[in-house]
Structures are given as C-alpha cells and as structure tokens.
Image (cartoon, rainbow, N blue to C red):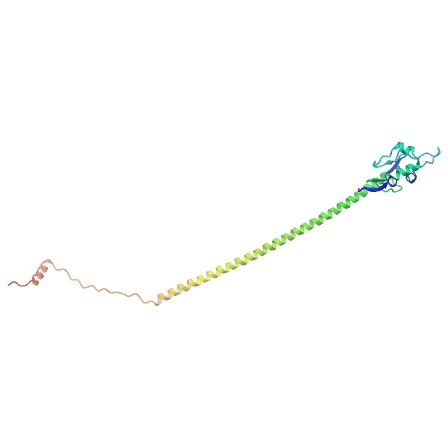
Length: 224
C-alpha cells in the first residue's frame, strides 16, 4: 500500500483501546478520538473508566508512551492523537467496526485489488499471446506464399525446359527421317556400276620337245 501523507491516528480504524472489564481490544470511541476523554461505565458502583488511558495501534505501526498518556489531560491526548503523521497502514475508521474487523476488511480489499491486478495481467498476457500467435501465423502465410511463388517460377522454368527438350527431340527425329529419305532417293536414281569384261586369248597346249625342235629347224635357212 502506498504511503498516505498527512493522516492522524484519531481517524484510523486501527486505533484500539483495552477494555478494563475483560481486557479485550476494542475500537476507540468518538469521544476519545475527538476529545481525548476516556468514557465512563454506567454501573452501580459508580462511573469507572471503560478502558485504559493509553491507546494501542492494532497493527503496531506506532507506539504510544504509557506514562505520557496517563499523566496528560484529555485535550493533550486529543492533540497527540490528531497530530498528522505519515503511515502506510492507515485505514479510515468506520464506527461500529473493531480494529480486527478493519484489518480483515483491509485484507479483503487488498485481495480484491490483487485479484483485479492478476486478472488484468492475465488479460494482457492473453492479448500478447494472441498477438504473438497472429504474428507467427502471418509470418507462416508469407513464407508459404513466398515458397509457392518460387515453386511456380521453378515449375514454369521446368516446363519450358521440358517443352524445349520435346521440341528438340521432335526436330531431331524429323531431321533424321529426312536424311534417311534423301539417302534412299539417291540410292534409287544412281546408275549401276560399270562392268569390265576381260577377254583372255585362247591358250594352246605346249608342244612336246621333238616337235619344238622340228619347228626351230624349219625356221633356219637351207644349206647349200
């Protein structure tokens, strides 16, 4: 709890007094807070002080000196209780509530404030988590779109290469077929190769040796 500047014990719900009858701690009455006077009991034995003169801080933030309060007048006690101080446990006094009930009420208020703070923190966390999920989903969508664009471009390139390959194959086949047709056409129109007939003279049987001698003699001149 933040410090409450310029507050007084007279207006705090934790200002308690100890009852003389049963020693209970009760809230200080308005007459003690505003006038410093201890209220009297109404009993057959006469008016007795209902509680001790020395007040008590229920949460023990401040200590009231007993000797001082016992010897001072009501006005002096009133001035002391209404002097302004700084206290981080100050709780506005609600008449009819005991100091313990003031403390319990204050604890409940702190719990409620803590619960509200926790809920706000959870809301902020959920909001930040949703924003983070949305950013991740957006990044994923952008990544998928980028990959799809790359795949489309790669697919178009691949398709163009495949088409070019098919066209080249078709052109190669057509060129090969045309070359075969031209070769076949030339083979049909060319003249047959020339044929050379070689005539060898008719051979005669070699004469035997006596006949050869007689023929040679016939070729010689006749003797005179």
